[in-house]
Length: 541
Image 1 (cartoon, rainbow, N blue to C red):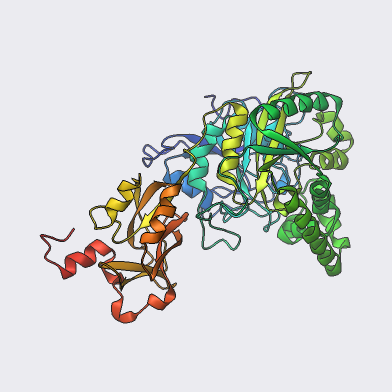
Image 2: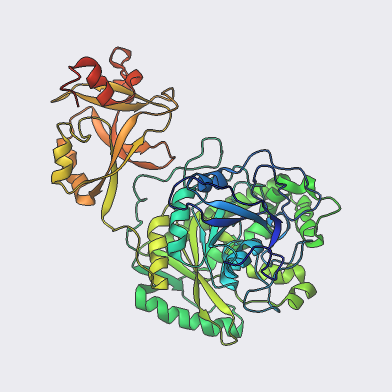
């Protein structure tokens, strides 16, 4: 790994002090990573590539803290298009980045420094953001994997906003396999982030656990000649890993145009317009201040048009799992961007701007080299919360091993199905294995409920202990879930259950009608502790 100070490009705005002597144990223990400089690290200014912003952050961003808790070590804050407004990597007073493959071609942005830090070997992974393609474009221009999760799955608390309703924290890595443990750490519900959303326990209707049908544009795209040749090869590769079907992509492209050509750009003005002082990049200033021409009525017209396009786009996913598109229509040079900074940048977003507007998850993956030797990247897009199967599809595209075995599910148990309890044998008989020991998220209470044997019911009342209640998470074949259903006596049933790490799994829960104060055993902290309190400690499990 190269030293962060010695990679030959202005990839870093701030290099952090020496890492701590010891780090927490975890799957990322000791792994260095870079952080885009619109994401807070306590004690370090979050400049967003604007020298006017010099006040140190008072708290580390939620996403960075999640990684640190798994043992990862931040080593620097990276360069970027100012205020995350740009897809070129040149809108920074700290210097323009260029592609790791060519000093004449742009690096892509706005997560330019993060991409360069990974591409040149300074760090194994880096955090970026992707509101309109800011993670996927630099990934494509530097031969990397750029993962843009479903909006809200990764908290943006501690991120200087560009468009708060659309912003996403993203990852840049060399492989899908490198991204998996990072995403496992990042994806968690944050109750203090108004845009945070928990991952559903089950995939949404219509989303397949294994993606085998990929949609591609039903007509030609306006690509530069070098890009067109690489895109043709990518379509051939797609047909080898999936069944390919043509779809009309115009609704997606129309939604992409809304982001900067309608009143949606006013969200950027609302988010950081007050920060556009003397240090503002002229192109950024022109784009953001241009939002003043839109009215409140224009904003609603944009929302109505987006609703129409979203409905049409949703229909495009009927019968298909994912959509394949190039990341960009071309790869401009630094000189071309300098000649036309607005136009060259706008063209780079024609295939990426719509992802968050349409509530899609996306993964940018390398797709070989263009005839001139520059990397070419494509993106796979799917409906919200299809992140896990989409990541598996991206791995298959790259020829990497698949993720966890398909056809299995996690089930949280807190009572009779715990290890050593009367119904645990049912889980083992059905092929279940203990996945982990965990606790509920805050807000749950536990009550005794009627049934064929003593058992508790978990009810989300909102006032349960912040530390949660003890439970186990079991890994089961999917058909085992169906086999369990007839054995579940009322008032218990299976439903989504939020765990203490913010993830959501299927679990045994009870209706609010079971919240009888006379049967409340929450104070014991667990079913086993309750049994010990009411039985002989020598015989209670």
